[in-house]
Length: 273
Image (cartoon, rainbow, N blue to C red; front, side):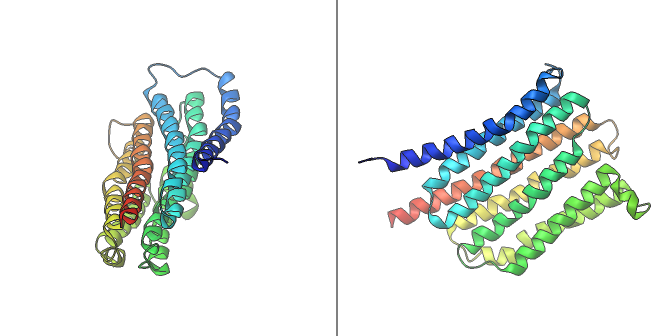
């Protein structure tokens, strides 16, 4: 009789995550073999590599730790792993695009954000839904605001806005900022904040940590946008990509870590009762 079934389950989770990495990475590795390698002075490229490794590491961590938390937190942990896992997948291509072309992989980046940012928004709903104080309306409003923010950013950075006429990069930036400001209002002053006040200590910890990440961490993105689109003199695409990579590392990994910490704290508290 196996006296440690949990160890087998954890090994299976880690093995599955690494198997996924092994399946996906060869395509990027094959591209690398046909191009020049990463230069020691390519600080933008180095930031891409660091971000890629961190996204994979945190994905495996969240999948493993999912087995250690109470059932009501498992979906939130799965979403945290999805956020970093999707980001890791896209970073394997974004980093190579930069090394090959020396240009910003902006389309890859927005595809990543269009998937991962709504998932992060969903985390607010999930942690409050776990205690029965969330509503579909609050989730819908946050989701719409996040999509407005991202679509406006995409039009502003890619020039795709030309199909709508003469709207400038600055106008699309302002529209995106409006979406972000609405999200900030809802999680600090709106109905979502009111609902969170009814939550347990661990849920409130996760909620408060996540909303400060949205306020402070997400503020890095508009700065990168301005750097890469001539809204701040003296900066360019390289500066923008370093800022974006740093923001992704802070926001996606820290966001998930706050959920993990709250889930662990809540699980331990429940076990001690």
